[in-house]
Image (tube, rainbow, N blue to C red; front, side, top):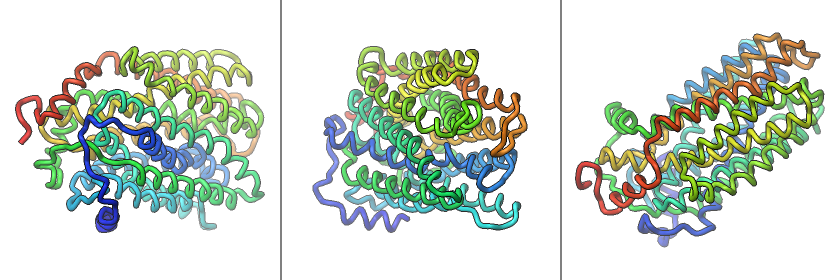
Length: 474
């Protein structure tokens, strides 16, 4: 993979030179960066929203076994992120296209192929089906790490400008929600076009994967690594001691890790259970594209407020406000008797309220990377982002346990009338768990996050001048 990356580096235009970290980004670069998460969503979101149903309903794998597949593979993936981060940080012979973009682009192509593979299942015995599901999803997760870690790290070397970073976060979240919107609306109709779901699932996945890879190319082609950073001591392969120093002395990062376990598990539980809630609690799987269009469409509009909210209240208060509103909306949705209209209104409010702080989080991560360099004198974007991504994988594992676990514990039967206990379990996973998780996230950010924007501006200035907390970076 490194050789391929270096080949891309050597072919890049000589005009793509590094600029000062204070350089303002163009609108084209900001939008193109957002296309990265747009492409990411076309492959990642399919697994989070539809793979559970594919395994249970189309492949006949039991809900308990599916819970194990998702939870264990996500834990495996979480430990792959530090490996990916170390490999990215250890890249040598960096060419004109920079440190992160080539690895991101090559890995995204492989990820697209594997996305289709995960939605296929050979006609074999059940133990082999389960083993196949484990193997394909684990390999998918490994390649996802080599796609997402460099993509996430890229933002930290595009700019140190606070306003530009909040806008990058907005465009990234916009790309993510745009992918959720399209996949959430289009996937089920494509699937239903085919009588055999074992044909419909891989074809739908193929269409989404092609769009995803194309979007990553837009990001690769139109973004640049402008920020000049000191990489003295970064060329060696990171050791466990380096990892510990970079991660465990970075309080803002540790706060984000803890917060993300709750926020991403809330979002993924919502996404995974939506198709089940629509089919059984609301009475028609056809409601799923409609609700997703309303819920995610409103979120796309809502995140446009991120730059203004951050400018007025700062990132920390903006995130806390979103978490509190989301917790209240989801809690009410559990208490109020199931009704299509009230459910749509409250689930939309809850999702918009979560989308805003999730967008702000990307700016938090870039700030944490710079804080780590300023605090330790060592810059390790890949390891830092991998540590953050570790928490996302753990959150995905938690969501899988809750989603498939609730189905298994409440007696879910595929493609049948569900019991009152199962319906309550589906509703609880959709609403009461996100309410609890977002309330905890608000407390975590309020009590632990210690990198307000004014402090970050001072840190960014020090880094521009080659300084760190204890002296001069040599």
